Image (cartoon, rainbow, N blue to C red):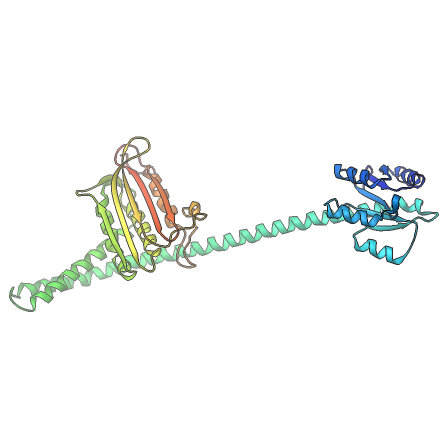
Length: 398
C-alpha cells in the first residue's frame, strides 16, 4: 500500500486523538481529526477520506456504530475501524455485522499496532476493489465472447443456408432443363392430334385445355431457367411491367397456396429503363417472396410502378411492393437490410435478400426505402433513374 492515504479520526477526547494522529502520521498517513459528527459527515461528503477511525462512544453519548449506520443509509459508506475503551463480544459482533473492517480496544499498547491495523484494513479494501474490477472485466469479456459466439453461430448457419439454397437453385435449373424435352415431345404429339381433330369434335375442347396447360408449363420452365441463369453483367432496355409479370408468374403457386391476391398497378404501355435484367429480376423475386412470407394467413400484394423524379431532379421510376402482412417492429426496421439479419423463423430465411436488393439498387444509382406498421403491412419503395448516369460493376454506361 502506498503512503499518503487520508485517515479521518472521529474522537471526542482530544488527548487520545493527538496520540492516534501522531502514531499514524509517523507511518506516512495524512491524518485529520474532529470531535463532532456533523463535521465528520461534511468532511466525508467532500470526498477524499480513505478510512474512518471511529470512536464507539462520542460526545453527548452518541453511539459510533449508529453514526456509521446513518452514513451507510446516506450512501456514504467507507472503510471503518471501530476504536473502543470497552472490550465485549456483543459490541464486536454488532460492529462486524454492520461492516466494520476491524475492532481495536484502547489498551496500553494499542497505539503501537494501530498503524498496522489501518494498513491491513486499507489493503483489504484495495484487494476487494481489484477483485471487483477483475470480476466486472471478466463478466464483460464473457458477455462479449457469448455475443461473438452467437453471431458466429448465426453467420455459420446463414452461410450454410445460403449454400443450400444455391444448390437447390442449381438442382432446379437442372430439373427445368430435363423437363423441356418431354414437354416438347408432348406438345408436338398434341399438335398432331389436334390437327386430326375437327373443330366440332367434342374431344377437341379438352385437348385445347391440355395444350394451354402445356404452354403454361413451358413458360414456367423457361422463366425458371432465366431466373437461375447466372450470365454476365449487362445493361439493356428493361420493361419493368414485363419483368414484374414474369416474377408473379413464377410465384403463382406460392401466391395461390397462401391465398394472396395480386393488384398490379402499372400504367398502359411499357415502362422501360436501362438496367441489368437479371439483377432486377432478382430484386423483384426477393421482394415479392418476402411479401408472400409476411402474409401467411392470406392478404393482398400490390405491385405499383409509377414515373417519379429523383432527388437530384432527374427523371426516374418508382416501384412499390406492398403487402398487408404482419409488418415489422419499429426497433427492427433499421436492421432489416443488414446482411444476415432476418425476422423470419429459424431455417426460413438467409438474411441476405434485402441486403442484396439494396446493393443491386445502389449499383443502378437508385434508392430503396422500407415503411412498415406492425399488424398493417410493409411497403418497399425503389426509385431508379430512367436515363443518365453510369452503372458500376462492369455495366455499360446509360
